[in-house]
Every structure is written in C-alpha cells, then in structure tokens.
Amino acid sequence: MADTAAQHPFTLERLVRDVADVLYLDTDDVSADENLLEQGLDSIRLMTLVEKWRAEGARIAFVDLAERPTLTEWAALLAPAGVPRAGA
Image (cartoon, rainbow, N blue to C red; front, side, top):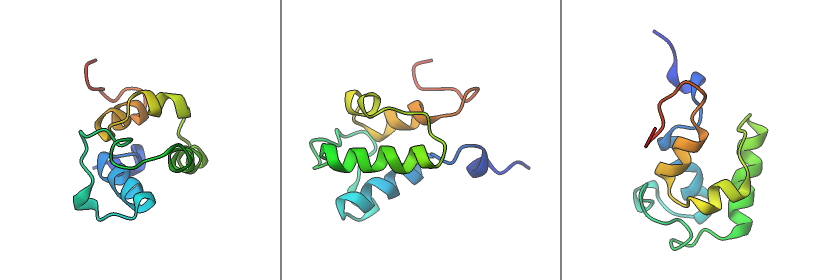
C-alpha cells in the first residue's frame, strides 16, 4: 500500500496544523471552509506559509492562496497532478 502522505504532503490535515501554528490556535479552532483572512491570517503569515511550503516542493504563489482563502481551496491548489481537485 502506498504512503499517501509521502505522495501528497499537503493534506488538509497538514494545512490545518500549519495555519493553526502561525495563528497560535488549536487545530480545532481552524475551519477548513472559513475565510482565513477573516480568522486573522495576515499577509505576513500567509507569506510565511508560502515560503515554508515552497521549500518543501509546493509550486504555489502568494496570490493563488490570497484569492482563495479557505483551507479546502488550498488543499485543491496544492494537490499534485493526477489527484482530483474540487470542482474538476
């Protein structure tokens, strides 16, 4: 059986943990479908996430995430080629 975390490191669960970390929240306090900018995610923290994820191989731009500020949308954007995306 293949390790899906190794194939797709940017799972929704991972994104929740990373966002909770930069917002100093518990993971239970981060909603996957709420606007993260309205939850307190500012441009500096967003750029911190972008740089961290790029260092781990993500091909993502700041503007991509800023224009779609929910974790559900981010998970779809960060899904590797061949993984079905929401709305596809």
